[in-house]
Image 1 (tube, rainbow, N blue to C red):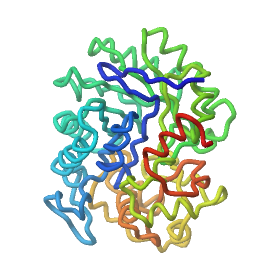
Image 2 (cartoon, helix red, strand yellow):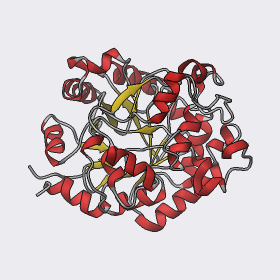
Image 3 (spheres, rainbow, N blue to C red):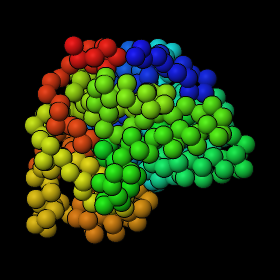
Image 4 (spheres, rainbow, N blue to C red):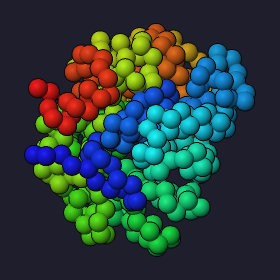
Length: 365
């Protein structure tokens, strides 16, 4: 099967591969810019930009380098710099920004990303019913929500059409093998009917009812054969996150990459999260500290996500997600939280983005 590109709104993606938006120092200018240059869609994560270049762009930083409040954790100045540097790599190729719906300051960060030069906005971590309102002043920016069910897409399309007279420019359907936060409750992640190959076809059928909405499959996709399988099921493209951690250009620290390289199938598990839904990460010393009640104290300096209710949920699960993801970005293995997809244990080498794209398009051989 020959893999071909597709369009999202006014933007043509040469190869049917979207790099997942991995927050807090994993997919920023180097990774996203290079993926777009190589014909995929590079995705800059807006999460945790306040720690970019050792907190140089956060106007106020508290103890242990923690950006103060959402306006600093989601730094506008840092996001603009990240886009500027990514553009220097990829030129006019399409470039996207991933913005979680669950964050505080969602509307502001969407506007910031559009002004910074994002061609496409991708949003998950909640059903983004108000996404068009946040981007209303930027009609040329394509909007791509992430869903886990056909019902969610139907609800979203009805709302968007009624309130803003528009539909998604594409939709990502994410199964429960992805890294980071899931769209299902813990027990639901293991049900056969919720796996990607089962939830993808109904979303494709729902998308057809609303016109020509491209559907992108995500969650657990690892190699060329996986991409072909998703395309044969009717997907227009795929989104892949964890596989791109194994590249020289990935913005993650060497220590972060080594944690994924050292992981095993048994050490990659779902964990409780202050966001309210489970998240998939590598089991490290942090989980032992949480179980023993010795994890670093929750202070909620950054006020990062609204479902946490200013640290209430963080204290309930035993850790602050902003602080622990920031530790991971800083290479602090003892206290860091390292997100990984279920197949992260299969990562066994660090190669260039160009070489990885070749493998994905043509096969490992």
